[in-house]
Amino acid sequence: MSIKSVVVCCCPSLIRPLIDRVEASPLGYRLARGAFWSMTGGVIARGLGLIASILVARMLGKSGFGELGIIQSTVGMFGTFAGFGLGLTATKFIAEYRTVDPEKAGRIRGLSNGFAWITGGITALILFFMAPWLAVHTLAAPDLKGLLQVGSLLLLLTAVSGVQMGILSGFESFKTVAKISLWTGLASFPLMVAGVYLAGLSGAVWAMVLAMGLNWFFNHVAIRSECNKADVPYAYGQSWKEVTVLWRFALPAMISGMFITLSDWALTAMLVNEPGGYGQMGLFNAARQWHVLILYVPLSISNMTLPILSNLLGEGNRRQYNKLVMVTSLLLTGLAFGAALPVALFSTNIMRAYGHDFIQGERVLLLVCFYSCWWAANIVIGQVLWSTGSSGLAMILAAARAVILLGSFLLVTPKNACGIALAYTITYVLMTAYQGILSARSVDKSFLSRSQALQPIEQP
Image 1 (tube, rainbow, N blue to C red):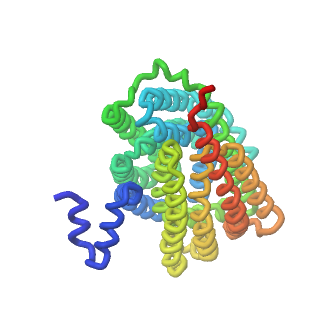
Image 2 (tube, rainbow, N blue to C red):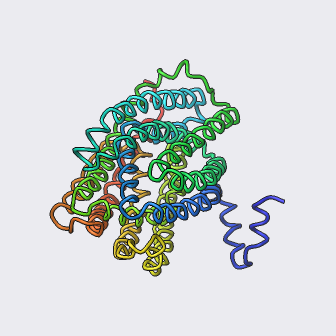
Image 3 (cartoon, one colour):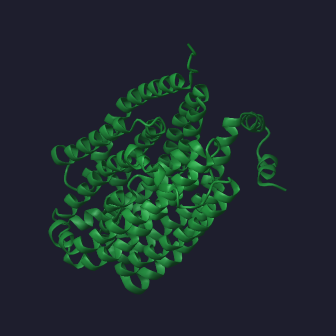
């Protein structure tokens, strides 16, 4: 018996007509199928990750957990340059061309994957040699030098794995992605707990490196399989024919990501330089784990939205495109609110689980719950901009986000964990309405230009 049959048999009779309607709609079935597989493996993996973070926080203490958070933030900041926007590029163009031009999709796969090793390797070397300076002059923690250098290996693997996930998303291989998330999560839990137990903070960083290495291997095997199924060539030989994609799409994606991650990292760097900053970073790092959980399902659904939107744009199907944007916008915001509400209600108990020193982070977690809902409202807007190729507008909005975020923290909010959470809240409240208006305009222009391009040329 298939999983779909089990779901239909077990669901209440009132819901079955809705299931029939979804199954009868090609777009609805695509969305529901992707959502199911995106959530299946990921919920278990994220749950294990959350439990691991609580155990790690209790073992490392507030300041040690803050140090782990700043290492992750620094690796993430450099990861923007290492990834070069290639994951997003692979998702959009493989989704757009995998059926109409498999050869082109294969070349883009090869280009994205190969270039990720180059940019990831160069950026990892830069982090390795900059680690001593960053630890002393920026993070006020000379003892973190060696762990930042270990983080350079994590950076390389994260960059390549990110592109691999983009490739799999372009194939709409959501079931495969769910399995990989599940197996990686199952491996990460014992690695992380054992690493911290045996070697403290150093063990935590090495555990993340090993887990990401496993993720890379699983992705590598899956991509070869998906290319064979879709008759998309796996070769690298002709990949450089698509090199213009790097400057036309990947570079703007990287610049947009740079504005976002640099501002996020600058915020945490300013925090740890305050008196008691690493303790405050520990509070924010604990609360941020729940931000990831609240947005997990919305982000999982959005990861499949971009390839579907790109595919609909390639087919010129504006009606289905607009319908998908509207439905997913409401769905993602509702899901985020539904996840944030119980977290907010039990915020005191949740922070107490991390240890006595974390109880004062209750207000931080409440603010994180609030801004996570606004963050979810912006997710589909970003997918619209990238699916329509509005890279210039996406860069402008990313820069505006950075200015508002840093300006709020420097001029308005207190310089502690609550201040960072409040700065994010201000930023996403202000950005939501403005981005919605601009993305609607980009959709109009995109479909207009595409319809003009598809019109037959009149013969004289």
